[in-house]
Image (cartoon, rainbow, N blue to C red):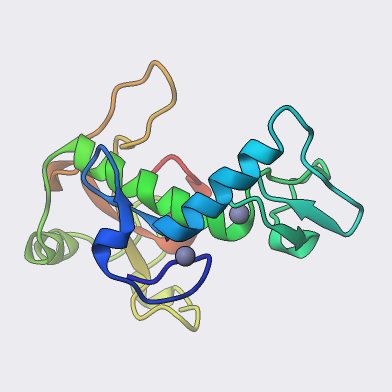
Length: 176
Ligand SMILES: [Zn+2]
Ligand SMILES: [Zn+2]
Ligand SMILES: [Zn+2]
């Protein structure tokens, strides 16, 4: 595994095991450093200037370009890297929690029933492909596996899957 902070390749057991069986992407050495800095800064406000900000997760002081800016002009409190690794963790944890799984074959069989995106009705062949994509569709959870509070959670079973084009999928945003 590669630690996203110090970028060095380390053995799996040098990363903290989480309750859900996954491991943090930050190595124990870096985590120790971060905890030390957090202690030093306890009770203090994080240091921000106009050009740089402190990430509350990794405690690094980074240029603002490393932080996602909201449309309201404020910034996320975790840097992009922390956000990314934290999010992928949460997503995988949710997938586990949702239960069920589908195979590539099941998805391919399902795909045969669709010649167009069920949401925007564009034919797969009419959808322009972005550079990094090989196919225009993605597997979408019909009932989201990360629902809004109070809504029921969908499963990760093939019965809850539909192919959606990537632009419809991204319109659904975080509610995958
Ligand atoms: Zn590290
Ligand atoms: Zn960070
Ligand atoms: Zn679509």
